[in-house]
Length: 460
Ligand code: 4AD
Ligand code: MG
Image 1 (cartoon, rainbow, N blue to C red):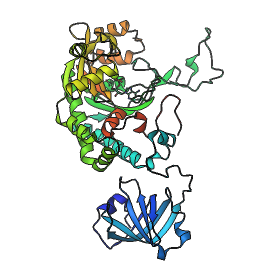
Image 2 (cartoon, rainbow, N blue to C red; image 1 turned 90 degrees about the horizontal axis):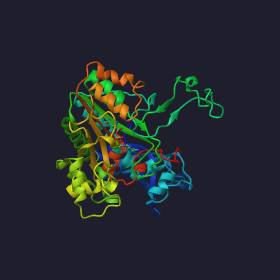
Image 3 (cartoon, protein in one colour; image 1 turned 135 degrees about the vertical axis):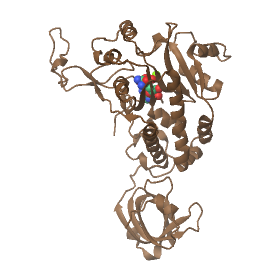
Image 4 (cartoon, rainbow, N blue to C red; image 1 turned 180 degrees about the horizontal axis):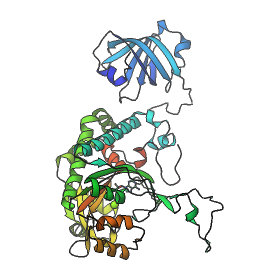
């Protein structure tokens, strides 16, 4: 027999046919004659209702069928008389597959998100996390589809890296040396020549540099993998382990890069609106009444594009008093990013940042002061995408690396792309969890990844 899921049964009009379902009990209620058991199997936010005539079942059979238990039920699919569902199952046979006693932590509705983080191993069984995780899957699928449909190749860049040159964040060391008694050099420092890779290695902060190598061969690539940053940023928007999507394209300048990024984000949000309707409606009702309207508004309007310098002017003429004063040359703070997005009432793409606050690989503008960077700022989230046109000129790149103390010799392989067949190219990085935050309307990044990694937090 075909294994039917709740999502299939709820769509079925095969009334009065025999059917069966396996899933987890969400609630059990009823009276002396009949029990109503709501069963969910993860396929959808909705439950199927089992109607159990108590005359046909012993108390012994029904007693262990409690919230959290896993059951197998057989019966007849009928049109429902009750409110809130179209079909239900009139049960003829019910089997307990796995019981859950009253220590099961998800007994009542309405647990706080903070509490659910402490039971992250079970929280996927709640409506909220079911919705978030299904949306997360749909977004991952849509990302691969978007790029595949446009001739981009998925490039798997390494997770363990021997370079710490990108400077995107503090790194986690990868080593097999004895932490108590590591081999030492004469000057007392650890001798990483004896380590597994014969050199010091870390977890990657970004796949970009290897991504550029791919773009110089395949034309258009994207990476989509975990990245790691050991900053002590205990904020609702930072994780120590997060997933990043990094497209990299030969023959793209900064304008092409912005067009791609805007189209990509709109595609993903529209994909969620089209394919995650039930889950979005649930989140809209439960957490954020403006969620769906906000998603539609981002899809329906062009993003605002302006230079960093113009943005600084906007901020300086703002009536609002900022905690951090704005000066040309300093990095924008969260409050400034929020102000800009609210001011323009749409996502904002900022370009041409001062070179000193951006990475060495960004292409220097003719003014000698700014680089062809682009950051995309989203409502509430702040920076969702960071990217740039890359410096393809060997001499200019080496000069920037030297000024910014990036080890030139160690980066010989990266510099080779500027020696052999260099060309104009661009790329960007989208923080996957920041996208999921925006699409789900969740407010803490730890609630949009199954098992968050953050300072002092690596349980599960
Ligand atoms: O701006 P970032 O640091 O850019 C890069 O890593 C470039 N190599 C990207 C490129 O051009 N290929 O990071 C890119 C995005 C940010 O805009 C943000 O959305 C996300 O990654 N991000 C984080 N997300 C969660 N937790 C963190 N600690 C994050 N740090 C960055
Ligand atoms: Mg950035």
